[in-house]
Image: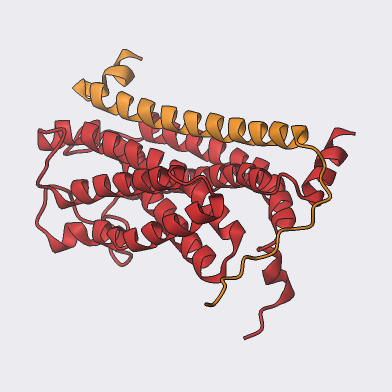
Length: 62
Length: 250
């Protein structure tokens, strides 16, 4: 077990590299889920409007 | 040119929102299982490298995160261009969703590369190395794209202005890819893309490719979930979304 952790002296580079990559993935997953949950909660709070879909903006020619 | 009807469905927020929701658990499951299997294989099952010893094990995360960083940029730039030219709002939503994922994977690639450089090159960071510099530039491109968007109150305006930055910056991606061929650098040359003679033994290649697949699924999983959130934010007061929310509640 300690051999796996130590990796002949290279464990000090390999494990942090994997650790930071894992942290990046976990933060990404957490952030994406939180963003979706917040957006859904915000949409539920907003009143149901019967407003028609917004029309594409047309640039006016002078 | 007349496009088939199903093609237009991909410009429809309700369709894409539901499709992304349906695909998400499959992509997430595939990503998690492939990454766990690949990491175990690469860290425990494979033998140490004859030249680099155990430091080579960063091989199973560094090229993958770097490749995701470049793919994320290409996805961001292509969808920004589509959104700009054809004024498709959904394309801009994909572009915005790819940016933070790309930035974080660029960061992971830089850190894992730096940790690999110390035992093999004798340095964490080499200012003269083109690939390191252009990958760092990629991180700043992602960050400036996000900063530029944050400077606008109006989302449509942010979409259009940031799209230009995204498209212009895409020239950096082929530069990163070819940097090791164009310049003499510390960074090693391509390993896998030489299809005719891949310079990696099969026992290393299999976990390497499992990790490539795992990171790819992971990227699209994250992208689809961010895209769903982005669609909800942009379509907040549309009838279909309110109906979908009400249907989901009952």
